[in-house]
Length: 404
Ligand SMILES: Cc1cc2nc3c(=O)[nH]c(=O)nc-3n(C[C@H](O)[C@H](O)[C@H](O)COP(=O)(O)OP(=O)(O)OC[C@H]3O[C@@H](n4cnc5c(N)ncnc54)[C@H](O)[C@@H]3O)c2cc1C
Image 1 (cartoon, protein in one colour):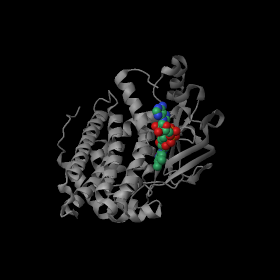
Image 2 (spheres, protein in one colour):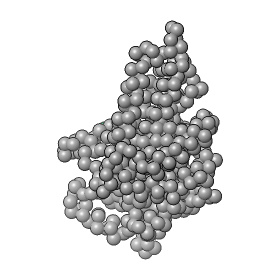
Image 3 (cartoon, protein in one colour):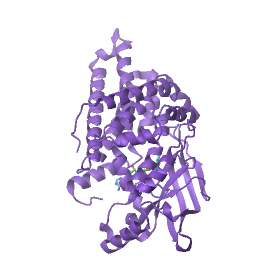
Image 4 (tube, helix red, strand yellow):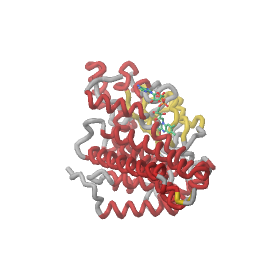
């Protein structure tokens, strides 16, 4: 077990500086353009792949760090650069986490690299859980997976909603109900390999923020995947279903929830990066902007806003680092993963709004980034578990009760 330590090691500091350079030199200058275009920023992701920032090696390196801190440190810098572009770079990570969390070692080796491709041939992954009628309520998925024993194939049918990289990804990881009567315990995750017939993109959503990230419906119409695409394998699924039937509703967590639990500190780190970016702009601006004959920071009303922003940002980072460390060293006990995502997300929304206030009219225009940061921050209180769902997870963890 690694010791919990707030001092980053030399490798982590080097990585942080390296990601920061990319965020400063490549992401920030291009952020407004891709926000306006609302298209997937292929050139930026390709550039990230060329320097080794997007790709399987980067993820493996970050994931193998025993302290757990490398990934949130890198993500904070990326999202400091820009959240829409950051999401385009990080989006495949959720599919990779879904495969790593539920697949056999052979499946991980086969499919995770295909979520990234190579520097010359970039690929994407998508993790498809949410549906038009099932977002927070993951147990109510309608997408069905039926086993065709004669051909050893699974047949998937349904519609997935709001999927990052949906339809443009090469590898789609789809969570579907095998036995809907068992709700979440009757679900399994499937790989839909590149080019599989029957999978198509539905509507592409126009969004409030993170516009450079592609979000779309994924339609599954009699999609047939080989038996080996069931993550974890058939034997394990059959045993799980049998246990769930015996135990009623008290079986183990559904696959999607396991993935979300593991990725929550990283999502918190995304929100943290946005918050820090907006805070730094606001601090500089407040020192320079003169009103009534003095810099506006000389008014307590402005200085205290900045003091609160700095405090909340540091508190968010401490929660994220603790959760990231716990995720790698013994697991969460009191909903620490959810605490970190919940607090960092709410902080990002508050801090970016205060940044606009401090910049006044300039803050409301596109000139200073903070209005975009405010729009980008909001998604973090919604995806990968809304703030209310995080509170529910924490409340259940601290009470041991099934609070509804
Ligand atoms: C840009 C974007 C990208 C996304 N990417 C992905 C992706 O890659 N893969 C994927 O699978 N999904 C993705 N999602 C979906 C996202 O995870 C869901 O939108 C989210 O989980 C919320 O579900 P919902 O929209 O159905 O809201 P609902 O579940 O309908 O919630 C609506 C409101 O009710 C509240 N609520 C619901 N239940 C409770 C309760 N029990 N107690 C208290 N309050 C409650 C919620 O907190 C929320 O405020 C993405 C969404 C967006 C917008």
